Image 1: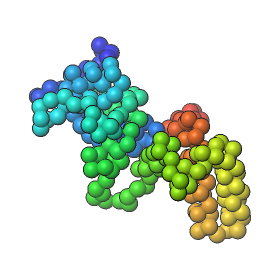
Image 2: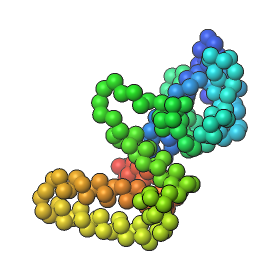
Image 3: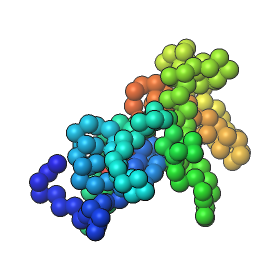
Length: 204
């Protein structure tokens, strides 16, 4: 850890750690770290936290197998919160949900990074545990050429829908194109964040 980085530990020697999916940007959970948990996280490349209820360190996924492989660790501007970007294996929440933030107080559920995160989790699961009845499993098994063909077909259907001037049809076809483009991204060993980073680079 950079010696110049100053973390504002609370009176118990803890700092909140927000965990985010590195591939999709979905916020997965909030936990706490003490100095040792942070050091173990940085050294091991997997997340460690401090349990306030048990008063002990714990590695994420020790019993469930839902481990978090660390991709980036950052400190906020005030030095009193940590952001950990991870590759999530399985569900992050002990309830079995992908994210701990699934009880919505306002707004629509499952949009933006959350929906992409859910799709990405399905892609990961079907790649590890193929299912005969799964459309995603079949496309992944058929390989890149089949996925590329589907992307081409869906792009053509988007053009036709746009020319027809039917907004409902266009939304339907754009959703198909986005789905297959995301699957192509996954199959190409890329992430949505790689694409977003390229878009961000083009802003300048």
